[in-house]
Amino acid sequence: MKTRITELLGIEYPIIQGGMAWVAEHNLAAAVSEAGGLGLIGGANAPGEVVREEIRKARALTKKPFGVNVMLMSPHAEDVARVVVEEGIKVVTTGAGNPGTYMKMWKEAGITVIPVVASVALAKMMERGGADAVIAEGSESGGHIGEATTMTLVPQVADAVSVPVVAAGGIGDGRGIAAAFMLGAEAVQLGTRFVVAKESIVHDKYKERILKAKDIDSVVTGRSHGHPVRGLRNQMTREYNRLEAEGKSFEELEYLTLGALRNAVMDGDVINGTVMAGQIAGMITKEQTCKEMIDEMIGQAVRLLKG
Ligand code: TUI
Image (cartoon, rainbow, N blue to C red; front, side):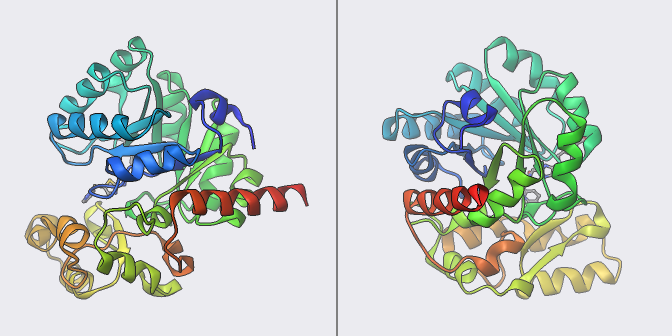
């Protein structure tokens, strides 16, 4: 499955791991890269120096390429943007915003820049701004989402830009990979499946919640606030959506979500914490190593695409 993306990134398989907040740390990133995909360290809301440490720890675990995801809504985004240059990172993905202000600095440093886009308009703007590829992320994804689904977004972005397109959102096995390729993608980005990887440091209760999730367990909070976030339903999401429907503002409801992702990922509070996961969680039923996941998915995708 050689594509422009595997060539661009110097990886064996066209699989990128999502830069998930709290989840995408050095152990997971290194394991995905070692298995032939592209691992990512998620900058999320962490300060630059924390990301620097994560980069160095990942380097100690793998000689293969890995990248950093810069979450643009973070108060430390500028700091992290500089740290990736100082640390000689070769691949940066961005999320939750427009990375335009950092593009010149990253390109001058020889970094391959792959922004996440949730619309054709942003994909075109990113291509004009020098992006090497784009990740078209549909609303099946976990965490902060856009409006369009993967099925509709990927082919429209593929038609609109010349740079290669990575599909994300709702992909969890070889069938999803083959489908994404049929829509015009040249690689996929997966988050939820890697959350339950053996190498993932996520609390067992969080993993168990994903492994036991049903197809309809996925909910979005904050749609009316313009901050839609997808996760698995629990007491927190029920309370949030009840108060949101009553007209409570984003600021009034912030107390429900502050620190809630950390509490779920690190402490296993899957009742009042935020269990971010994509809609494909219902299909994810086994904890495997990253290598087992990637080998299985690629085998399945290749068989389907040959057929
Ligand atoms: O960024 C993500 N997913 C995330 S970030 C995150 S951290 C967080 N924690 C709590 C609350 C909110 C966020 C959790 N999940 N995915 C990439 C992504 N980017 N999805 C959608 C977008 C996006 C949306 C609009 C990118 C750009 C955009 O427009 C930018 C503009 O200014 O035009």
